[in-house]
Length: 353
Image (tube, rainbow, N blue to C red; front, side, top):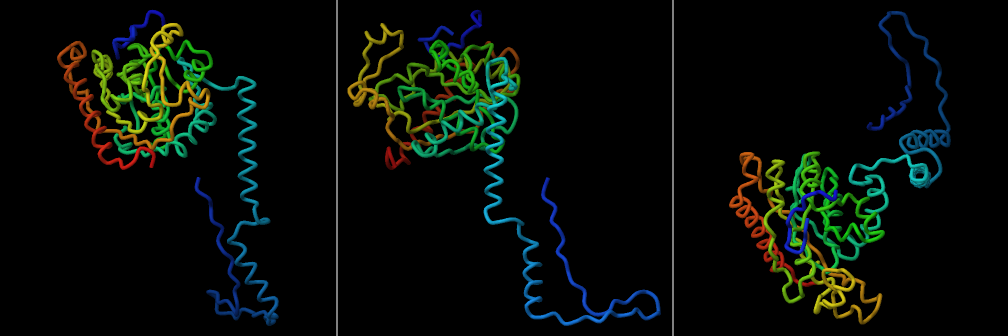
């Protein structure tokens, strides 16, 4: 990993259906056969009115689930409890799988996504558009704008793809090296499927048919002042385009509106940032003045739109080394994201509603 070549995203970086039971029917009168002999007819005694009523009820009940009321809910609860206990057993015994990058699909589906989903659905109330532009299978590179002081936009994009795509695909994000040196954050990022933003890891994931996400603005985008909101920063030298060309995968532009306002960055304590080893130290209207309460993001209304794919499979193999082609494709992706941002901002009536 130490020898991996880093994609220059920015200048600040160095690298069985159920079977239905047929209903019963009561035969009355005589039955004819193919023979000429008369068939004896059994005398049928008239049923009392009370008995007939009971028979009607019994026939009707055959079509309904048997058992006391609430049995289906109890069975669902029992299955959830059993599933939870089985999950805990597998975690305690180590009977689960992770890939070479540390991605834990079971933990992501059952725990981490469940933790992020209330923030996605109830707090930011994310609206997703254009998810049909993401292929149902095979590799693809999603390129999105980056903002918000803290990288919550990447996590919300990951939930959007997983919950709204018909195939329930997982998005593997390329993250900055700072993510993988922070305690706890490092482990959680690996479990969620994030990996280092280097060309070797990106090409390997795309070659395996994974859906990979990248935010080329890097720290320049996420740490820009509030006065420059929704103005895309430079996309570096187009390393993500070169990766997509080598793997012949489409590039899908993604525009995110709403993240810029969760932490309005009105200042940057650069001296403190250098002491802590951070690329910036944000000053917002609430942080650090309100202490831990100031770290709570504002409940803005989000929109995530996935644009039409930009194909790369029609270029020759040597195209990945053509700087002019990479510049043109990078500029095309950037312009498409910026244009969609402006369109979504015009359509937006309120930051919070």
